[in-house]
Image 1 (spheres, rainbow, N blue to C red):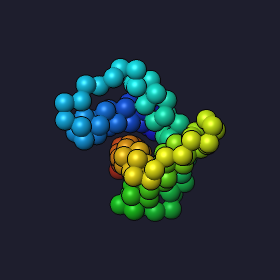
Image 2 (cartoon, one colour):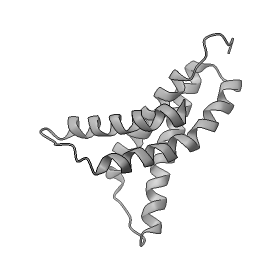
Image 3 (cartoon, one colour):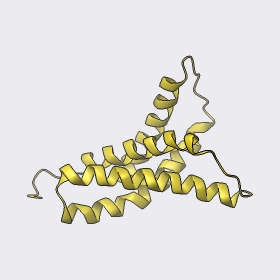
Image 4 (cartoon, one colour):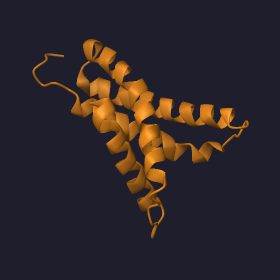
Length: 120
């Protein structure tokens, strides 16, 4: 679920959050592959964490924990890529939308991957 649906959700969430934040924003189609690949990496890292949490905690606790991990992975990935590309640092307030997008994306995937037949 995370690798199949996650990047699509991440791309849609990213462009809808930006469009809501900036009125009259015209979506740049060159950013779609970048947002897709970024969401793919975040979901590929967060998916196994959700799989482990599925055996330990109920879904009411698992989805928020997975969202927190997704936000941390998204911010960590941006900081890592910035450090690799010449030591570029970003102000902390610019990382908030990235954390929100990572949290919404992985939290939604966690809820969608929950099996109702399981007792946990």
